[in-house]
Image (cartoon, rainbow, N blue to C red):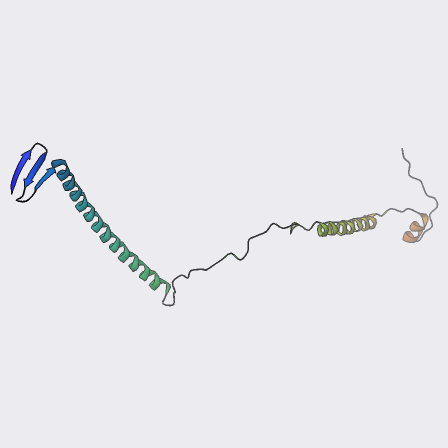
Length: 149
């Protein structure tokens, strides 16, 4: 085997064939190999970090279970599914306007009657001679009309 170097290309002669190799291809291949080795190192470091993180998580989960108690069960996954989609109602569910109107009419009528009764009970004036006679037991001599002036 003989080798011959010419600028960026070298030739390798074997007894039965000749090979021509470009130096840039060789250096590129060496760079790729070096990067591959760096990638392998990073991959190994990440695998080691993942293993240590997994061990730490397992330890924390064991401590949590011990703190909760022996009967603690891991959280269960809730299975839910949509049975039917919501639809827009034709009329509002609340407020029921007719019911509120009926309550307002009855309530205001009761309040009006109560106010009228209270005012009548509070009125202590005499309106006729019979009222004076019933209240005092004496007959009045005269009644005086109320003057508008």
